[in-house]
Image (cartoon, rainbow, N blue to C red; front, side, top):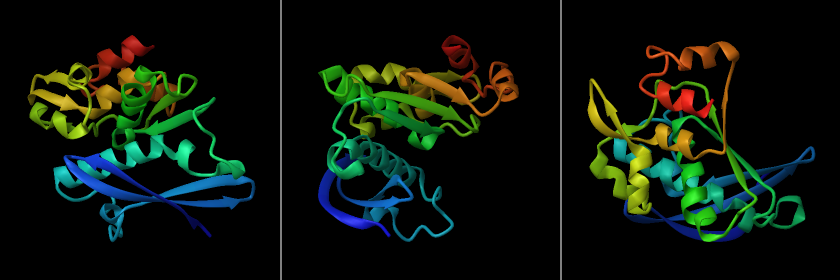
Length: 199
């Protein structure tokens, strides 16, 4: 039922300009927004697959495009703008959304009343990668410290989930039992200190 809202935007993902189209549907009183780009197509059952760089490009593009939905898509008849909004990001694939919200917008006086919630379903998958890939995120250099993590096994790396957990206004876990597990060294998969600090 979704229709093309006629908005074409270009976002950089891992150094490439990529076109995004927004689609909208209003079903049973709920606005649904879909983001279309060639890099998202023909994934079938393999939406999380591909090379590390392909996955990273899709993640970056999705998060950048999602943050701007309130400005471009007429939900409720008109675009929301940057008023009282809450973005909910799930696991590492959308962990850049809270980071982009802060770095691109809130740090520059935009979306001041917009907040982000990071939901942890599975902390074992974190989007770990080499530190030298950080420039692909197109973030200011000083944001690298939010990504940089040291792992006794893998050494120093950039960790996308860690950055999202640090930047989100609120962190939510799927159950009290999982929260307890995440605070342990074994269950936190290297992010237990961040979870403990976030309370």
